Image (cartoon, rainbow, N blue to C red):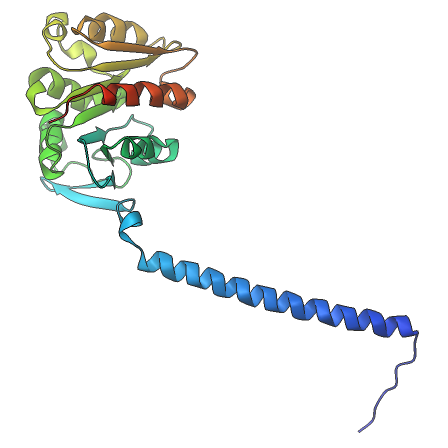
Length: 255
């Protein structure tokens, strides 16, 4: 066996000594970090009751698989069901922090993917699909009692009919520049007996007029126009949106 003798400056040996030490420290640190990550991942998989309610859940509503988030506090004052607009989903309310705000205020927040959106299936018989009846059945399936319904934009096709024709089934309504307002007469809005928070954006030129003309006729309605906001006004000014929503929830006596 032949040995090769390396000739060089003593500084070379000092450098190699320190370099070897740094390598050992780096390997040890990564090993520990990897163990810690593995431990965290194991804990997440095992999970706890605190995180479970934040997972996506599914429920069958007359043959339609509906996906939803359920943010439930330990003691709930009532249930808030959040619908969504055409370009959005249940995840919108999670990312915006609205579900957290609702839960922290003592209410159960349930954000759903409407049929054909997000992770929910399309209606089995689309031509005969009744959106108002679907929403009624969804409330029963979720065991939501008399919930508060939040219905922005497109989801007005589900909520307007429910609020005007079956107001006894819900404790409050939060229409956010919804469509389908003109499907009912002004007189129907004038005779609606239900706590309502109507929210719309100052720059929503398509729906601002309808909101003021129809929802503005509801006795005792709280009208909130968000300054500088467009159609999805809750995205433009989430601070104003959350403040108005939580104030409305605080004013309710939910069954």
